[in-house]
Length: 313
Length: 246
Image (cartoon, rainbow over all chains, first blue to last red; front, side, top):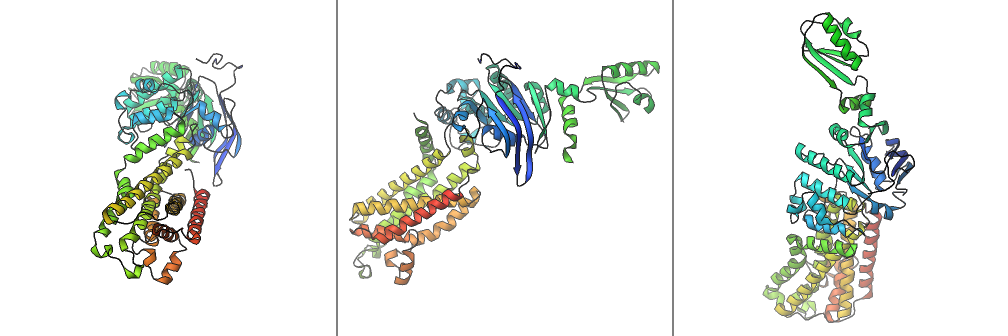
């Protein structure tokens, strides 16, 4: 859909560029030197605990807030200075916004279509988002999931090049959340760049090509989901219930193991594939049976917790 | 269809879905006029009022009441709700300015107040034999200035109150004294001299005097028109100065 926009191609300009972004409220820095670049066609995640500056950052991208310092460019446009052009190419779903209580789904779609010079066919959008049966329903009577789907439709109705989705699935039940993820994948497949703010690890892991992990107003790490997991110490987790107790000494001596813990007769070791092999030979050497042996890759959750753990300091 | 037409159309539909709001703006002033008109003594010429009947004075008063209902009672919670619920914010991320939403609501409340005013004049004429405004251009000018003042006061209330709840409370607090100044309890012409000389310089007191004069057939006093316009200007300035988009 967007010829020339090959992901990761150094010749293409990033579609979103944020550099040295700072924003303080009442002297308290909320965003403190954030920088990242999003390539066209990418699903770029912003992940972080509450208060890490995620929403403020995307509000600067959307042009809703004036940065105290730093530069933001979306398709080469200044979100505040070039507002008129920006609003034409940027679709937005805000974290906390509603529509007029008594506006029907159909009226909302028609209204927002009229805002753009070359809108998408709202009937088709409604169809894709499963809203066809709800066209005459008023906004106030929609369920949480239906409201979110309508907001996605409104974010897409202007045929944007970039959509910003801020905590899209917060408050949805697991099923509605999964349905929404499918939609985001469809948006990505149609060539639209997606900037996704979330605090669900599973969501970020499944949808995002790259993730910026925010911590206290800064980017603590920026990588692919797999890269972030690899980076975290002890990315493989081995756990088992030994048939007889093991010495601490034996466990600390395991190669490449980062941590181990015992709880309720169960031993959990974080390490690498080498650690797994070492555990198995250790058990064999001592003729210990490992009941309920589990070897799992650590998840983005673990990586996230490590990256953000001193948040409270 | 242009974007602002689309906004106006959508807001008109929404406006027509608010039966309470419609009743208070369009219905209530006429209902009040009818109740007052059913009191026999109000239909008798009163020598204290220069031979006019009380009901004659109440037609312009209820016309002004329609403006106050629309501007101060109905409009502020709508504007404030649009701000509080993020509707203005959502719109500011589109190519359309959120000001067009506010403008549409102000225009619709103004239109509803005009319909209400026509209804009051018509019912006054048909049911209670109240003469039509004797000086139509003067009447229209006084009415427009009064409407401007009421809408500006509503906008100013929205601007200074932080939440929808606060807007509703502040709107009601302002609403009752303004009804008094407009002459809903005692028509301004029937107020004791010293009180009247103060009320004439306050919002709606002057508008009431101007409307009353034009109803009788004369061009309104320039002082009354000037005071009404000045209040509208001050309130618009206050609304612009203090309004926050979020």
